[in-house]
Amino acid sequence: MKAAVQRLVVGLSILLTVSSILFFVSSAMGDPIHSLLPHDATEAEKDLLRKTLGLDAPALVRFGLYILKTITLQFGNSYKLGEPVLDIALPYLWATMKLIVLVLPIGIVGGIGVGFLGLYLPTKLDSQLNKALLMLHSIPGFVPCILAIELFSVHLKWFPPSGSQGIQSLVLPVLLLAGAEAIKIGLLFRSKLQEVAKEKFVVTARAKNVSTFRFSVHYLLRPALSLIFSFVSIQVGVLLSSTIVVETIFSYPGIGNLTVGAIASHDLPLIQACLVFTTLLFIFSRFLLDMLHPLIDPRVKQNQVWERKE
Image (cartoon, rainbow, N blue to C red; front, side, top):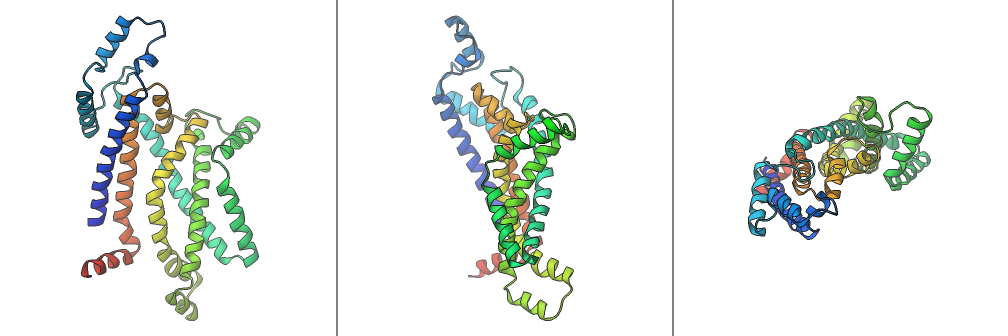
């Protein structure tokens, strides 16, 4: 509990630091007025818009207001669209959260299945499976996306190639992201299973002729789940970055796609909201997994007690 809270506090402090860096990087990118007005706009029109957006204030004042907006989650209006940032960003954030909520369970179950498959396969087939997983893991993420659109959307016409048209629009993005997660988790999980299989309590269980189901779940799966939880807690952040590629290719209205558009238009309030929301999603998801971790693997709690005694 204490370690989880400490990580939460550190994560929030890092959020403020990264948000501050974003302010200075955005300032170095140039005046957003040039991207918001046509090229033939007069200086009077530029000064009026700059005053309307509050860009005429001193840098220190603008930075203070920027940090205050980050803390209160009140980002004001979008430079480009002129609408409240929260009204724009929250639906996109929810769309991305739907992807992650669907992808993680499928990826975890698939990775666990791949790990157990490699454990029970003959040595030669296990080696070939490992090579196949490594080959698939090395393929750039956009390649399977393009191939999936070409096959399932253009030729077979099973799923829409882009947009958000209900459940059908989620199938390809979810399966592609979940497949990538299953490959990563499978590679780690199979190596962890091989390590756990050499433990003394596992050897003793085999000698006692424990049933296959109990042996797989209690003696192999549960100890190895510690690695899965540690990996997934970090992988949420990696998955958020992966959704940017998938959302852009499939024109899916997620927070990653929104971030790309906001960066292109130098829309600082919208970029700020996207950064804050995605970072908070990562921080709180990791906090939740840290709270659940000791329930899955009691050794985590025991190690913490032992460290305190020393």
